[in-house]
Image 1 (cartoon, rainbow, N blue to C red):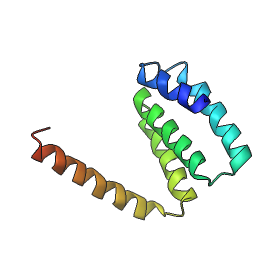
Image 2 (image 1 turned 60 degrees about the vertical axis):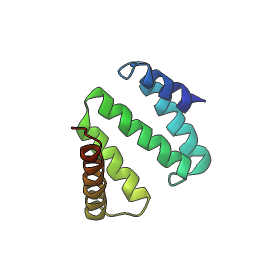
Image 3 (image 1 turned 90 degrees about the vertical axis):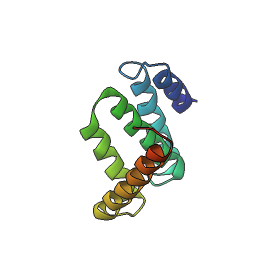
Image 4 (image 1 turned 45 degrees about the vertical axis):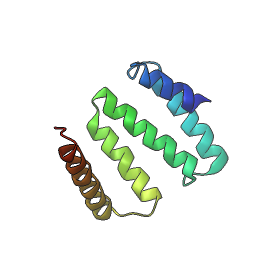
Length: 100
């Protein structure tokens, strides 16, 4: 419920103030209950990274994403290569559809 509340606040444009504490509490509870590598914890970390991006804090968002990759057993170079591949595929899809 905390994660969902934070997600709704973020979607409503309240990324700076209200959403962050909800994500932090959800992450703590989930890590304590499920362990640090559980898929639900990983999803919460992803949400935290998205929130940080929405705030314009790309360096911290990158650090959180690197933590996710580490928890998933993916080394940084592999993660960066996979991200680059996904970004290129997204850009190509946008180009084909007439996007930027």
